[in-house]
Image (cartoon, rainbow, N blue to C red; front, side, top):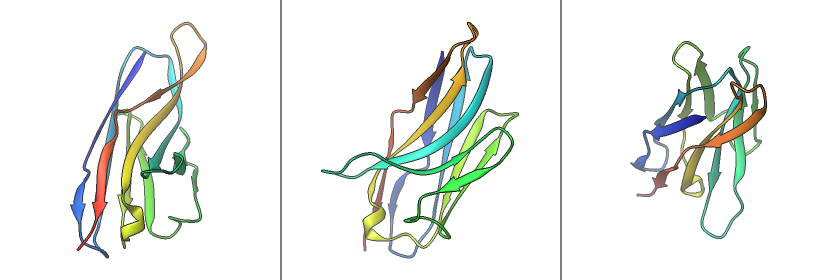
Length: 120
């Protein structure tokens, strides 16, 4: 099973930047897609960005051009560089990994979440 631990959240002023990190550990055969989601109070969790093992990325329109997802396969880590942050980016940010268990079955794992607050 994969365990995901996020870090890097915090309080930032509008227009500022933050970099989130997520490290995967545990027993697995392969991690396929890793992604970042967020959930604001009273809203559904939304997918922000994803990256596959080959480095191909996809972004939600709300963050395209401001956020950049990257991945270090050797470290089983994924990152989210967030620039030009807005108050509406305030949310709990979650890391997700779609991976293949040692048994060969695919499944997903979630991190515990990290709070990002954008406020002056």
